[in-house]
Image (cartoon, rainbow, N blue to C red; front, side, top):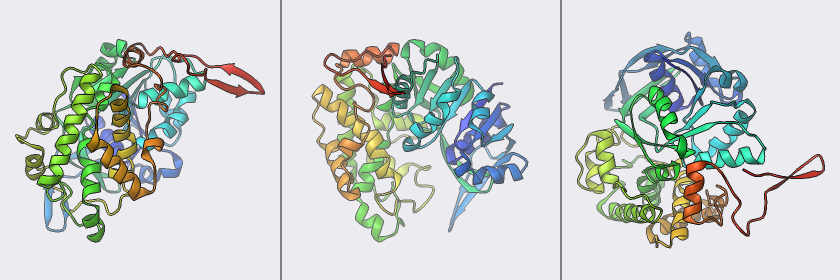
Length: 400
């Protein structure tokens, strides 16, 4: 059994803490004091989290997976103590929160730490950049998964509902030349099969939120707003016409991946069938027959400010658009959805999203990017100014 720290006590964080604890792992569940009301409920319950056997929503009654209760070894609002608890750290938080949490984590990193983000969204590259800027040299391993393993939600104080559990997830390591070491450790705590990819960039291509979330939300926003979210996101939102757009996006995704050198690009339909054990023949058929995604009834976003648009567009779609520009692949479907999302939210996501510049990849060729992903050794591209930070009135160059 392993010691593991889970950063973040949201839906996925509490579910991880429950599931790992139920399997005998010693878990420390951490949340920042400003957002830690949920931790108080768990502490009041004797550190026990319950996974309920069923979830009721109106007339719907949904049976839960792996129900039971488990005691979490440690509940903490102290990031220093949470980081000292374990060598393996799981961060299952929204993409917009990852850099902020990593900023809290950095002072307490030590050689040998493995930090796993779910979904990854190339957070490793952001974290590595942050470490370079802070001139922090620690031998840290980063793991990224394409998604969280669970379809889950908090349903009450110290209570979660687990409606679905993937059989496998795509997983990559930064730097990729230490993949075997990281996979051995990650397999022990992620409790499912890992489909190991060549690097964390390839893993990003399997975050299939990019195919279904922003497109369904953008193309149905009129109905979502008018009905205040009382709408089946998948079964109703992914109509035959919407699914045609999504298939085009999946084709564009595969074309970009092949240009980057990822030779075995699995389609959305094939991957989703493997994840959930279904037999859909098309994206539209998936939306109609998936028992997990339709189980929660009316669950559409009420506005474009919600995460299906405001998170997945900048952190999942925009990097794909950036790689498309780098490789010369036309992506009219991706570009259209990013444009619509930006109009909805009065934001230029092409500038504010996760660009190559923000990942410190701007100016690099495909070959240089893949070499960096493999070795973790960053070198400023020719013509790119050296990174300079000011400290006590003096300037210092920062290099990888």
